[in-house]
Length: 286
Length: 156
Image (cartoon, rainbow over all chains, first blue to last red; front, side):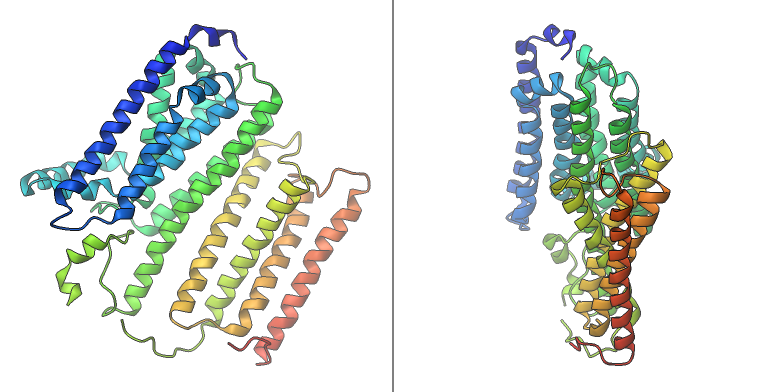
């Protein structure tokens, strides 16, 4: 319970929710339009659309005014919001292979330019698993173990920036580690599994540190509240990370089966099982 | 899809996968029963150093990752009919017992992450904890010997 909570009128929070929902709705509509435009030529797996919808809904739930308000007052609800924005929504958004859909919708010239753009050094650096993990997990250490968190409560623009940071860094991390979108410069499986492992250790350790030392400081929250927030981060974070490990292991299983049966079922993309990409590979279909 | 031709059972990989599953299973029991349901174990002990907490984070992550890896290894062996049936049980029990013993000695006593229960005479609980681990290890070892002699209970 903090004094500054009265600074933000419910009206302002309602406006934030409205803007966030509008952007999320636009994102969803663009995806749906992309599916609609091309599904006649190549069918788009329905469950990818479902995943994207689930990802967008998860984002939307995190911006419900009541939750926004509660998250502002109570570290536990902040943690719920953080988990929804940074860990669970990205799973839906990334496993819906938006890049594959985008490439399919672009004219050949545009698709080539996009692939070239993805191959440029800044993008490759930013989407490298190590950098993505540093931005994602390192950002959390910075947020919770410094006065940044307390500052974000009293500085609206910082609060908005942090929400955006959670979404972007979470999505970037998920995409860099286990994204099923084809990416020519994606590092190998061992590197991605290794980075995921280290990131999981760092996340679990952060949960324990928050609990042990009552972080984040300066919020006026009671110890009980901080303990619960830390435990929610620890256990629910596990669940989202377990999905990533399973996705990487599924890729391993597929590669191994392919190696044992070269004339078996057609090849998939590096990690995913996109049915439409199988069709793209007529040589293997024969 | 080609019909998988009969292959020799892969004893080494079956053992590894089963041990990983055993470790993960025991860790899950620890986490669910003793941390959550009974609430005997504490999330951390007051006064734990940052290093102890990091080692706890490392162990916890390993438990989770090893369990998933073990499950996928077992699926992969199943897919090419290469599971060595008699070795699954021993591997699983060795993993369980090994983890329990390790947890009782290293986590509880050496690192002091948390105790079995916060009561007087905690040493009784410690003996029961490590003893249970050693019993499971012994059963696993016995079953492994039987499997090696071709007398495993499970042949399929």
